[in-house]
Amino acid sequence: MKKIVVSLVLVLLVSSGIGFVLQGLFDSFWKGFTASLICHFLAIVVINSLSRKKNIVSQLEDALGNVLALQTVKVTCPCGKGSYEEPLFINKDNIFKCDVCRNTFRVDVDYETVLQTNQPSLNSMYDSLRAGKEEEL
Image (cartoon, rainbow, N blue to C red; front, top):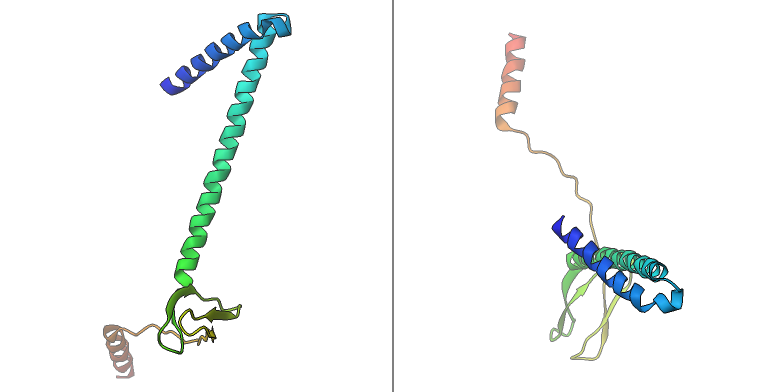
């Protein structure tokens, strides 16, 4: 709250000074003061919107960096001398050039699907088998 009051007082003081300077151009102090005040508030709005856009862009860049970091893999050239950390993509040809042997090589990204199941608890299996045997008796 204190910052807002100090900021408003500073804007009013600067606008008053500019109003005095521009009173010959606008034929009165109040016209120059009003024009200066409007320019101040427009500048504040523009600066705030630019800083918000900058924050959004930096957040998107951070998110993209995190995604690329998840896809980055150590790639070794078939010659065995060059190794690089590069992001690999499934839907793109991953072609690299080795700085040591000057050959290009491609990395194929293969993936398999694996069915995951929950391991049954031995206690619950024992209890269910015991309950089934008791029902039969």
